[in-house]
Length: 130
Image (tube, rainbow, N blue to C red; front, side):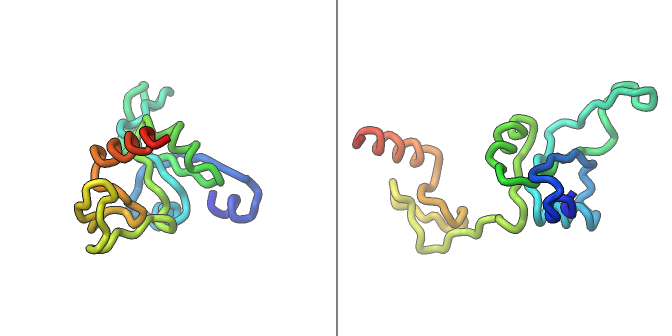
């Protein structure tokens, strides 16, 4: 999947795999591809399965230019995880919430508010100014 994408054979791809976090191929995919870690196992139907849930957890991997679309479609089925190559850093101890002034230490590097409550307050303030 990575090779085909890197060569330009495909412009975007989604693939379903068993979640084998200890495998080298999984680590390679996790470094480059977005993934959806499913909340429930997928039930496969056929003579060998009988329609029951699989014996392993599954994960969807996505490579392409529209990760927001992948998140919108697959987010309702599980947790969306960005590739390790784009994972955000964390804020330092000097960063503070733009609404209440509390410390943002340990949150994502691009955080500007400390909580959902402050995010809602900031949104209401912007709407009132507009």
